[in-house]
Image 1 (cartoon, chains in turn blue, red):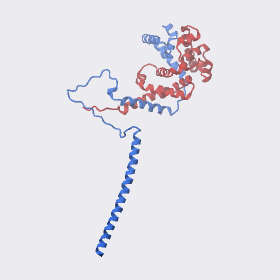
Image 2 (cartoon, one colour):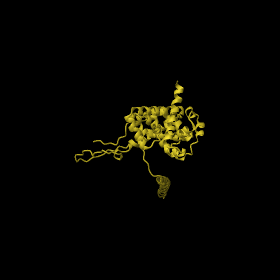
Image 3 (spheres, chains in turn cyan, red):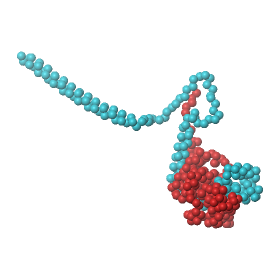
Image 4 (spheres, chains in turn purple, blue):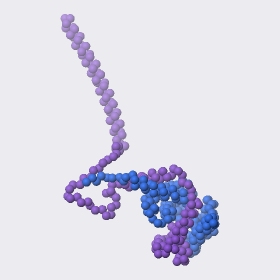
Amino acid sequence: MQEYINSGILEAYVLGCASEQEVQEVLGVKERHPEVKSALLALEEDMERLAGSMAIEPPAHLWPKIADEINEITLRETRQPSIYREQPNYKQPETDNKPQYIDIESEATHMRIHKAWRWVFAAVFVLGKIFLGFAIYYYLENRQMNEQMNELKTELKQLKTTK
Amino acid sequence: MNTRLQNLADTPLQAKVQDVQFIYDRYAGMLLGYIYDVVKDRTLAEQYLNDTFTTVALLADELTKSEENIYRKLQLIARGKLSSYFNTMQQCDISETVKHRPNKYLNSMSERQLQVFCGVHYHGKKINTIAAEMNEPEDVVKKLLKEAFLIIRKSNDARVY
């Protein structure tokens, strides 16, 4: 077994450059021989030691960014309805021939629409202003005409009384 | 029966972030040092570190509960992320590697040991590739790798005692 440990295969395994066959072999031998297991542990400590001596302090802004990304990924996964997730042992629930309803509660207060609608909204707004302008114009004109009519009526009455 | 679509509560999410943060606090510096030695660009190294830890989030349970060395697993994840970068790398320039960031462990290695160690560790090469490059049998390359590790151990023991 010492020969196996000295062969260099464990170092290749620890560095991740062993072939798949070698990896399986090392894992099998590791389970059977505690000396191989302890040799691997020692090599992993050596790797950590080397890495520790070459370590670089990560910038402070990096962790919050990573945490945000993790939150986003996790939320994206959990928000996916369970029906779309892989469920290898999924069993249809007992329904007793009763109709099944799913309550869907939307928490969103905003809706998203296609950008093309902004031209429609702009056109409706402009036309609304034009119609409002016309309405005010005709209202004022109508009021003026009514006043003139009233004046004419009073003039006619006055003429009739003078005759 | 109320079958509302549910989101997970905040607690498991926070627990997951805390698990990853625990690993990050302990190993991010080591991993950034390793990645930087591979890519030799601080911004790019930070980006790879970011990608590595977002992958770690998916494996956090496996990493923390497993008996295997966490740093080794992290390094394997980082190597996976760097695989396409490894393919674009030029021939391993040993003097450049040692000059770039002098290190007592690397400085103590012979040129052949360094060629094997740097080839595997910083250039993601397989043993058979290095054997072909050095025109040596794979067993000789593995022995050189073993010697490189012994130097790391001896250098540390010399420092301790």
